[in-house]
Image 1 (cartoon, rainbow, N blue to C red):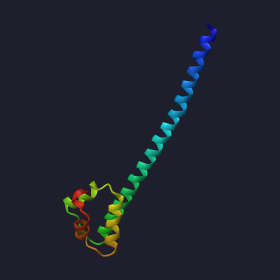
Image 2 (image 1 turned 30 degrees about the vertical axis):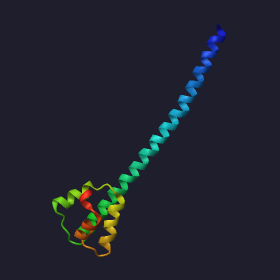
Image 3 (image 1 turned 60 degrees about the horizontal axis):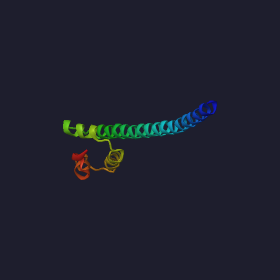
Length: 104
């Protein structure tokens, strides 16, 4: 009987080991996903702030519809593209019309 109990404990130890290993791996992956999402959100927020400063610096007041579009846009590349185009002298309306901002 003692042998059967030892075998069960051995299996339980192995199961516990794999749960620790895979659990840590899953936690690590979850943390990495969280960090990546945080970086993405930070990039979006920074691009949005810079775009607003550019617009303000050029004396461009946003309509409520444009402000809503800007706030809803969570694509850092699009926001950064708008910044680039504004710095190159394009109009805000031109940026919105050419980039399909209606889709956010």
